[in-house]
Image (cartoon, rainbow, N blue to C red; front, side, top):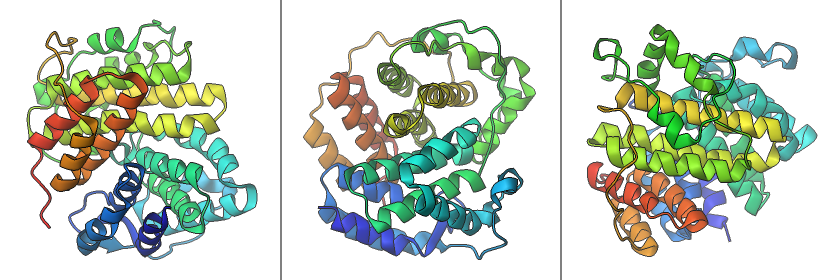
Amino acid sequence: MGHALDSALGQLHAYGCELNNGLTNHAPMVAEALHHLGLDSAIEAWLSTELKRCLLRPSHVQPVMLDEWQDALADPARYSDWADLFNNEIGNMGWTATLQQWVPRLTPGFASAATHGIIRVGHATRALRDSETEARLLELAEALASWACNYFVLPVATGKPLQLNPSHALTGIALAPEDLRNTSGSITAALAGLQAIPEFADHFATLNVDDDIDELALDVAATFARLFCQSARSVSGAIVFTHAITAVNAVRNIGPYLLADDGKALLRQAFHTGCALHAVYSANRYAPPVHEPLPLDTAECIYDALQHGDEHVIKLTDACVTFTEATGDAFFLTAAERCRRLVPPRTR
């Protein structure tokens, strides 16, 4: 099992983390999501179309030195240099130790590339959990590289935690004023506008992370599924709020390989980033929905996502199926179905 995934990852090694339209290359993540959903037979066909949009990996600039790695952060031109560093780190210490050392270093940049860095690392980690192959080890190195070279930090302030649960904490997030919203470009550019709202940083300390970390992650994901159902009203809205949910799925995939405090820090950043998306893109402040979720079937949602074909729909469905299996919460599949209906089907 997994030959189709390894074959896809092998082909993708020739490409970087961007598409020819300037957006993120989702292909490695979608290939792993399809594999996890039991759809290995669909990977090759999906990838054959997607490769036409992928840009070749950039040339090397200069090696990233271990004692000067901070200097190479946030430079997309250094993608191949970072990939070499992480490939060496994995070869020298193993992939689990590499995660344990490097994820805490990169955690402050959780929002990097609209969370695609952490999400890709989450997919790579889950693939390695199932089978440790050369292609998957290399993909983890490149996933970490995509996180590092697109490094971006949200404003945060440390203070006495308010010890709120996710729903109550999200309810307290004030929306950014319209004149400070820059939502016509990339998600990263829009989030950068929060630098002009000093009080947003204070929300970083609102979440209570003292409880069981996996149970809390499920609670955070459930809150963001409800936020999706409230705030996703357009194509762009569906794509934006997809990342809040899929990023928490990445935390659950990576968390078991981190020290406890590092896992809590990663989840706190996931929640803070979801709050940032809400502050910039939502039309109304968050209020837990009073309506009932849709009665949906997991197998049907998976089939519909595959037929639809869009990368965000597939990845969100993968995450929501995982969360549904863990919680039985029907709002997850409701969010996935709403995404499928809002985002246009992929052109084949």
